[in-house]
Image (cartoon, rainbow, N blue to C red; front, side, top):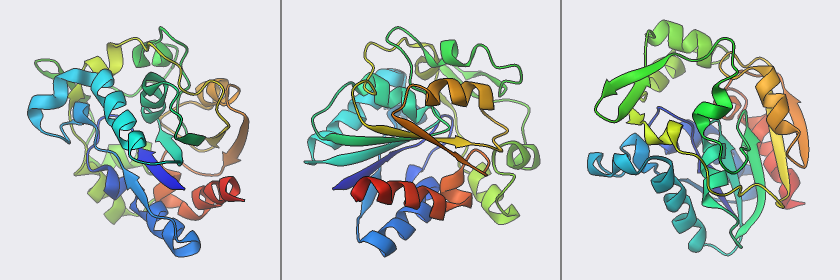
Length: 233
């Protein structure tokens, strides 16, 4: 069994974000994991960003093509990538962390349109968008209030621009349908509302509420690993 992590929007260096959970998972189970690089965030070279969601989904499919069986873990935007990647025979389970299970024809922008306190995102260059109005302090308070200051600073240094197509492209598949899944509702999330999380959690096989902010795989990796271990028993 392999574990494949898909990180959220507007950040780079997926391996860093997932490292606390990946390290604990390996320590407790011996299972190694990988975090895919998202082209839309410039992780495979600036020349590859334009592909947006379609390119990110293709990257996930390539990773799945190389394994026999995998648990795929999607955070936030990562759930949209899972959806667009479509059904893949190597996917045995899905684990969503404050994420999205969109219907065919929905874009991330569609999914987020009902939020009353949306994250502020705007154009930062041709075909690219990024966070607007945040600094290391306000970013930490909103996204990582349950992590220490050094982690917040490290996270802020990994915030990046992303292709606008990641947000505006309508999905052509719903890779979550018909796959066993668990949704981790982050009960103290200040980024994605509880209402939106619960709406998408209802589409998963089951859901669990965690007493965490938006990134439990950083602040409480033990809780995330516990849910991953449930798939292995």
